[in-house]
Image 1 (cartoon, rainbow, N blue to C red):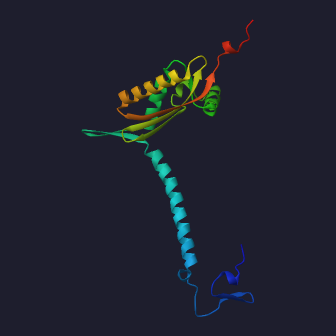
Image 2: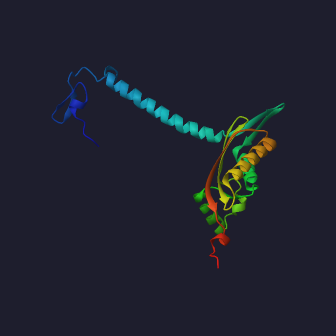
Image 3: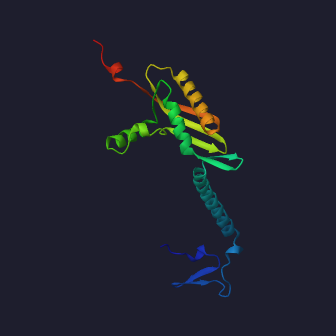
Length: 194
């Protein structure tokens, strides 16, 4: 614990080992010191802003559902549903080898090896969806098969994803952002020719 120095506290002085008020009838009033009030106000604002950002992020993730109004109620569509439909649409495009970045694929391979699931079951790996009402923004990370041109494959992925989401879920797709993370080269291409 740190020692309090009498000069640090306005209106205080040290006598021997005791800290006493310079004016024994006057008590320290933090409101009278404008610096204390300003620093406390600044600290409060910083704490409120930080907690607000964290709470906002948590609420956004919890509320990341599409809501489509109907005549007799509201239908809520979870982002996981959109991610799964997107994964199926992406994997149907010739030239797409796998979904997800390097780390996601490594973890999937480890899980598959130790018997905790198969890579085929993870249709939503490498897909992130942001839902806002009846609108969806989709981010996809994928691996292209060697020999396929990147732009035609990604154009077909984008078309398939938009079509599947809009037809199956009735959501408006505002963006489909695609990151090509790797190129898969099969063993036949690696083997030396005779």
